[in-house]
Amino acid sequence: MKRIGVGLAAAAVLVVSGCGAMHPGAAIVVDGQSVSAQKVDDLAEKLCTAVTASGQSDVGGGDVRQQAASMMLLLTATREAADDLGIEVEPSKYALTNDDSQMLESQFPDANTSDMEKLIKISKETSALMTAIGEEESGESGQKAQQAGQKYVQDYLADADVDIDPRYGLDETNQPQDVESLSVRVSDESDDLPSSQECD
Image 1 (cartoon, one colour):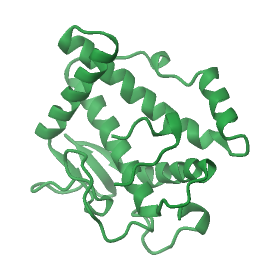
Image 2 (tube, helix red, strand yellow):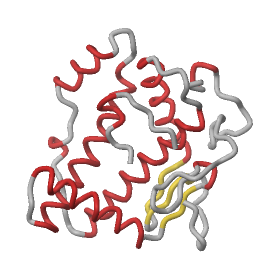
Image 3 (cartoon, one colour):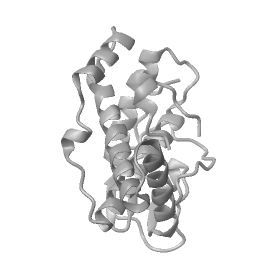
Image 4 (cartoon, one colour):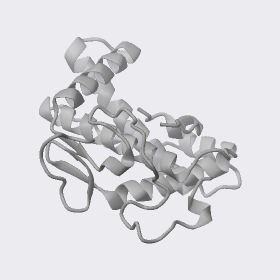
């Protein structure tokens, strides 16, 4: 999977299961918690906005959809892992701050930064939950807690009942797999995306 570099918006980068059936309209299912293909497609459009604003010209629509699915798989797994442990994080811990907004406006003065704000929120929520998991499981704090939380979620994914639409090109541990094409919406394959959303 080609990782898309858009600063803080790409911080949350980092399935085909052999059994079970996908929920109708679902792109991702983690232990019964599903994420719709529409939600992944909408996130991919926001990633396209960030890619375009950052001036990258070698990122295809398939790469963007794969990354969007990866972000949602990681967030969903982290939420489920935290829930299993009885861990809650106050939304204020990962809310968008004025500094975040100013950073976006400074880096992308000509872009509609509202789309990028969603990417940052996903990144911050995933990070906050991972840190809380790491603190609970390891007794550490700061970066060591973050690393412990990341390992815990990776192990959780390895043991969880995970399904992902194979067209997104991810396995059940969130590792990229080759796919022929994701240049169109998975939730509406009959229509090509406009050129502004292809990220080519």
